[in-house]
Length: 93
Image 1 (tube, helix red, strand yellow):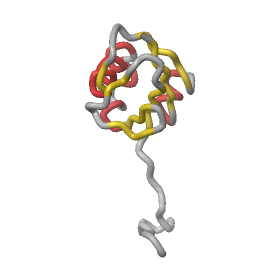
Image 2: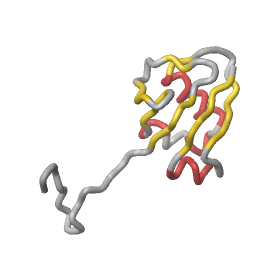
Image 3: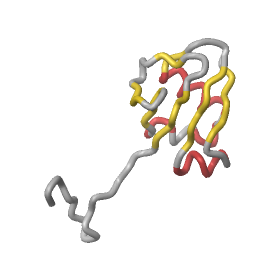
Protein backbone atom coordinates (compact mmCIF):
# COMPACT_ATOMS: atom_id res chain seq x y z
CA UNK A 1 0.00 0.00 0.00
CA UNK A 2 1.21 3.49 -0.77
CA UNK A 3 0.64 6.90 0.83
CA UNK A 4 1.87 10.33 -0.23
CA UNK A 5 3.75 12.39 2.35
CA UNK A 6 3.74 16.19 2.06
CA UNK A 7 6.71 17.76 3.84
CA UNK A 8 7.21 21.31 5.06
CA UNK A 9 9.86 23.40 6.83
CA UNK A 10 12.91 21.69 8.30
CA UNK A 11 11.57 18.26 7.41
CA UNK A 12 11.44 19.21 3.74
CA UNK A 13 14.98 20.61 3.94
CA UNK A 14 16.40 17.53 5.67
CA UNK A 15 14.81 15.08 3.25
CA UNK A 16 15.34 17.28 0.18
CA UNK A 17 11.80 17.06 -1.18
CA UNK A 18 8.33 18.45 -0.58
CA UNK A 19 6.49 15.25 -1.54
CA UNK A 20 7.31 11.55 -1.37
CA UNK A 21 5.60 8.21 -1.74
CA UNK A 22 5.92 5.81 1.16
CA UNK A 23 5.20 2.10 0.77
CA UNK A 24 3.58 0.48 3.79
CA UNK A 25 2.66 -3.12 4.51
CA UNK A 26 -0.83 -2.30 5.81
CA UNK A 27 -3.07 0.45 7.11
CA UNK A 28 -1.61 2.26 10.13
CA UNK A 29 -2.61 4.87 12.65
CA UNK A 30 -0.91 8.26 12.49
CA UNK A 31 1.12 7.31 15.58
CA UNK A 32 2.29 4.08 13.94
CA UNK A 33 3.14 6.01 10.78
CA UNK A 34 5.18 8.48 12.86
CA UNK A 35 7.24 5.54 14.16
CA UNK A 36 7.70 4.08 10.67
CA UNK A 37 8.97 7.43 9.38
CA UNK A 38 11.36 7.78 12.35
CA UNK A 39 12.80 4.32 11.69
CA UNK A 40 13.11 4.82 7.92
CA UNK A 41 14.50 8.39 8.18
CA UNK A 42 16.37 8.61 11.51
CA UNK A 43 17.72 12.10 10.78
CA UNK A 44 14.19 13.51 11.18
CA UNK A 45 13.15 11.39 14.19
CA UNK A 46 13.68 14.23 16.69
CA UNK A 47 11.33 16.51 14.73
CA UNK A 48 8.41 14.09 14.45
CA UNK A 49 6.98 14.48 17.99
CA UNK A 50 6.57 18.22 17.34
CA UNK A 51 4.66 17.92 14.07
CA UNK A 52 0.94 17.96 13.46
CA UNK A 53 -0.39 15.50 10.90
CA UNK A 54 -3.25 15.84 8.47
CA UNK A 55 -4.79 13.09 6.40
CA UNK A 56 -6.48 14.14 3.18
CA UNK A 57 -6.49 17.84 4.22
CA UNK A 58 -8.04 17.22 7.66
CA UNK A 59 -6.07 17.49 10.89
CA UNK A 60 -5.56 14.00 12.27
CA UNK A 61 -5.17 12.66 15.78
CA UNK A 62 -2.69 9.95 16.67
CA UNK A 63 -5.39 7.27 16.33
CA UNK A 64 -6.53 8.36 12.83
CA UNK A 65 -6.23 5.52 10.33
CA UNK A 66 -4.02 6.05 7.28
CA UNK A 67 -5.15 4.04 4.25
CA UNK A 68 -3.88 3.27 0.76
CA UNK A 69 -3.82 6.36 -1.43
CA UNK A 70 -4.09 8.85 1.44
CA UNK A 71 -2.16 12.11 1.42
CA UNK A 72 -0.51 12.77 4.77
CA UNK A 73 0.92 16.21 5.51
CA UNK A 74 3.52 16.62 8.26
CA UNK A 75 3.01 20.14 9.54
CA UNK A 76 5.62 21.95 11.66
CA UNK A 77 4.67 24.20 14.57
CA UNK A 78 3.72 27.70 13.50
CA UNK A 79 4.70 30.80 15.39
CA UNK A 80 4.13 34.45 14.81
CA UNK A 81 1.72 37.17 15.62
CA UNK A 82 4.23 39.11 17.70
CA UNK A 83 4.86 42.82 17.37
CA UNK A 84 8.65 42.48 17.27
CA UNK A 85 8.96 43.39 20.94
CA UNK A 86 7.99 40.02 22.40
CA UNK A 87 4.29 40.86 22.72
CA UNK A 88 1.75 38.52 21.17
CA UNK A 89 -1.15 39.98 19.29
CA UNK A 90 -4.55 38.47 19.74
CA UNK A 91 -7.77 38.97 17.89
CA UNK A 92 -8.36 42.68 17.43
CA UNK A 93 -4.86 43.47 18.73
